[in-house]
Image 1 (cartoon, helix red, strand yellow):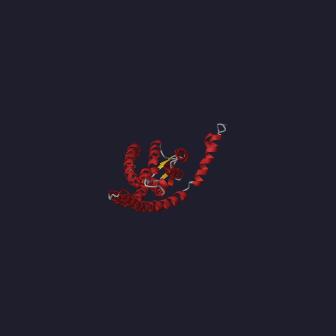
Image 2 (image 1 turned 90 degrees about the vertical axis):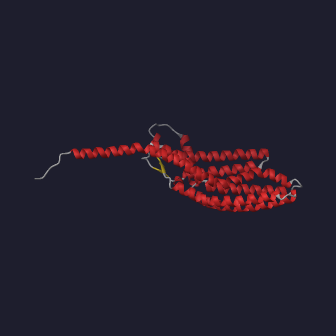
Image 3 (image 1 turned 90 degrees about the horizontal axis):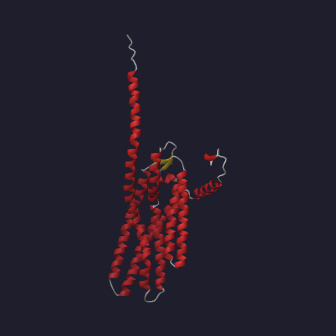
Length: 296
């Protein structure tokens, strides 16, 4: 508002949205993010273990119902793959956080960060409401759980824009337009990488809970119980698979994306380096051109 104080115009809309942004910033704090991140990491790990046991139980049930060992063999393969991916995820997630910490950037002011924090919050709520409406209309719990997972991702993404320290972004008035452009672009990559634990935990937790509910519903069915479970479980298993693979995808995509950004940053810095070097050379030449006073 201080930028428009001399225009004598009442920008009520700015005041309203500034108040909303300030309220969101007071709720979506660094403590909120870190504490929930730790909790979801534990829940994701436990959900992965439960899912591997869940698969073995359901595959055994399927083998008995179909009188075929193939279903049990598939269950063993899925359970082992789950444990391997769980191990890889737990190894790569700290690596993603270390890469973010070692990739600092800066912006000239908080305006962009506040705008993106507000937009992420609005988008997360809108997508969740829309998918929840479709879930009720289509009588599909899958859509509701997917909407919940998307809401978590956007909500914690908004938190990172409100607390840029978590993605190694500082506010510096000396930041040039070119470097700020790189920082703006890289902020989306950093946010995507920083919510890797949130996505890992929430997707695994939501997917496994929904899968357990489907299993309980299948147990109350007659002979078609196992078949209905296989049909309904596809999307939930897909959500669990996404949670197990998100760390791998995030790690490699972050490396290649930041490599491209740092190459661009190095190119943009070259003119400044040459300008600084030319100033030093000019000063040196000026000092050398001064007559020397010789003492007899």
